[in-house]
Length: 194
Image 1 (tube, one colour):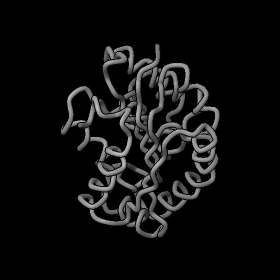
Image 2 (cartoon, helix red, strand yellow):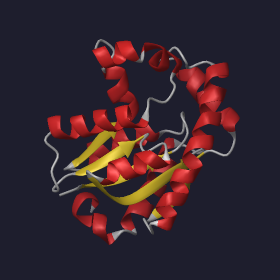
Image 3 (cartoon, one colour):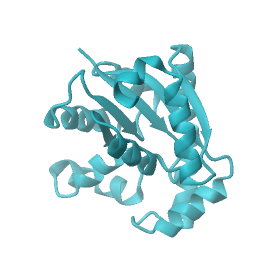
């Protein structure tokens, strides 16, 4: 029994968390699960101590570690097939797609695309919430994102998973409206969104 999910993909600074939080607030039985937030929430755990330098740099955790945290969060939150999970920031690698398929039924993928990496760097630098929210680290994280996640989009396309690419360089409201339009085109999501 796998939990239904919508995957929000995009580089750091594209607005995944912002859009997922907004969708979660607007609809019942829709739950935002952010791999980044899960990892940051582990800051005092043995896991965090083991990967402290990875966490401090904002680097990607090993696939199995990231998936373990997501699976654990779904169990702890009591998610069922009546719920819809909005995954923010996962999967980031092809192996993560397979690991997620054990517990999630991905119904739709939304790719928040920002073709101008300087916009992403500026957004991350402006928020300044994390040690790696600076121009140098932000640029590195954007490059790594594109290198690792481009093949993930290809996997979802090969699996014929509905996929929408949305220009996330625009305002939050415009991006949200495009996400809603993409979701409306997927009747299998109506029970959660409409």
